[in-house]
Image (cartoon, rainbow, N blue to C red; front, side, top):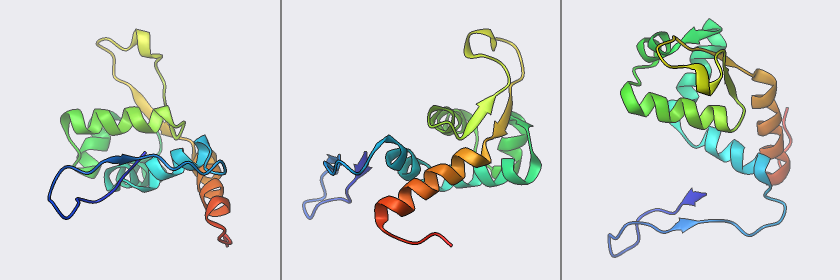
Length: 120
């Protein structure tokens, strides 16, 4: 979903879900990826440094605590990163996150096709 900016009355914006049938789950995932600076930084960090622990990602991006966890969860949810330990077995264990660059490219391709733009 996209968030529309604050209205003229200063109230909290409404959530907007496009109804275009060409806007599929991959396009929506691309918007979730591209619409967040912290997610950009995480993707960039993993691209440059390879598989990394949460503490390394935090130190390299400046994203801390719950915010980092939220962004890592979102990136895993759209298939852009993977964790080396399954969710049910993570207690007390350090998780290493890996970027799936092919998935990133696939999502960006989907967004470019949806937008009708050439990707060079």
